[in-house]
Image (cartoon, rainbow, N blue to C red; front, side, top):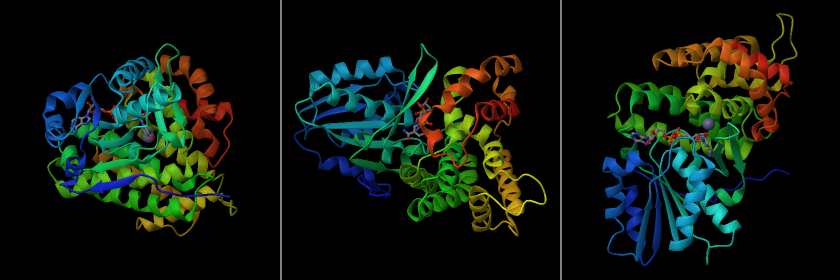
Length: 379
Ligand SMILES: NC(=O)c1ccc[n+]([C@@H]2O[C@H](COP(=O)([O-])OP(=O)(O)OC[C@H]3O[C@@H](n4cnc5c(N)ncnc54)[C@H](O)[C@@H]3O)[C@@H](O)[C@H]2O)c1
Ligand SMILES: [Zn+2]
């Protein structure tokens, strides 16, 4: 039996931040990163709540790929404030850290009541504002762990496109490719349903149509809004269906290669599609389910898809063109990772990827050697 429910209430539009004006008499714990704190964006949030609420604490220690130590520091602060509301204001790293801080605090029974978590994304990428995932890094073991639990789901998400205007082009491209990878992995996951497909298809279409515009002109608010919505839609899709080995390898290699999450996903995407589609030779008429789904996607995107082989080929070609438009790197070498490093680390990364939570929902069960080959092929 499969199930689908959408527990997060979503506010959207340029005035969506006004939702915060409805908060009264609360102790509010605001979690963010140092860039957002200094950017002036934080003032927009605080201005809507000050004077109506009791106590505020701003915790701005979040760094990209948040380590366990940051979560532990946040738990100490939350214990003193005992907030009714937690506001996570930032990119995926901030929202993931806030989810983990809240969850740890509840598991440790240090809060009197369960606070409401309001997620306000300032990047358009992870969709974490609507997912049961939080990715935390163990720096010592050089591992990124996806924690998966419905208790991590935010109660509310605020999608305000004006907050992502300031995201620079390279981060717009990286995070946008993360959205595309979420949509495509959810679409071919073993747990995909008609419901997750609907969200994934829309997210993928919006990315191909609007991401190049948002990349070329960050002030293009229509494009920014569409990409922001795509991020959330893809988050809903993979929260229903799960992800796959593209993300498993990205998680496992993130703490080794120090490449931004979305960029790493982008490097792997076409190779993983080829692996999953499993089109062996020209005589193959028994296409895998994944190949059929990729071909269907190609059709939806208006590409020629007269058979699965052509559909998969054209989908990958379309992705490569998008990557080119976004000036994305296409090899680990272009990201500063040497071939020696790849050879040295590929086994340990593959071992971690094999047991990553996302591998369970991949449409094709990989062997350790398959994962090593995929990593080797993007050298
Ligand atoms: N929980 C999930 O479902 C999920 C899904 C995918 C990825 N992730 C995780 O999320 C993290 C990546 O999140 P991300 O891609 O959003 O990046 P991020 O949160 O790490 O932020 C990247 C950079 O962008 C900056 N930034 C954020 N908002 C900005 C703005 N409006 N203007 C200018 N700069 C801004 C940040 O200060 C930071 O330097 C990774 O740890 C990844 O593993 C989680
Ligand atoms: Zn991702």
